[in-house]
Length: 247
Image (cartoon, rainbow, N blue to C red; front, side, top):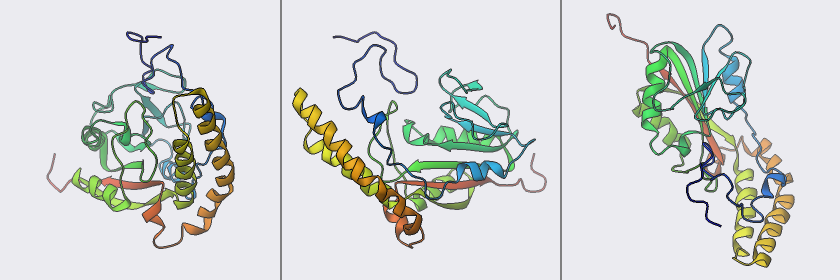
């Protein structure tokens, strides 16, 4: 069936009415291998209680706290503001905290978003970013980049921010379990219905085996080299205070 000309979903890029390959449609029901051994987003937002202005960019409809303003490209439930991340619809120097988790890897160019975050933040305000490191490719609708912990720090510094705390929030055990499941599915991947069924079954089987492994990150997160195999990393960047006499 041809799906040309049908409207694409604003976040997934999938055209309405497009079929989903067998197996991929079931993976949303498989046991989740994602586990945040060091969850940070809610904790960072908690440092900015009302009346602080906090904006969650690319929120996908979630709400980290009641006072957080949510922005997304799609008008979906839970989104307060529909806008372009490269042209944030806020005046300059008005926001205390910008949050962007699972966003910048899906941008064709992350620099305009960072420049806009710097513009809208008050002096002394901060941007908090989470991004994958050793996660598999996942288009939404594109998937463009990965960062290490020092790479994300450097990106913030190059964008004018003063790098703050950084680390990983999803650890090496999640990396190993998730990539193993995707690798098992790849080995049996094919065009026939049988191949697709076997591939989906392999993904499910390895996911079930790997599910308990992810909790090992509670302990491995303290190892000095754990960041080298992290699944997801984070960094906080502060907008520098203006020097005396600056406008």
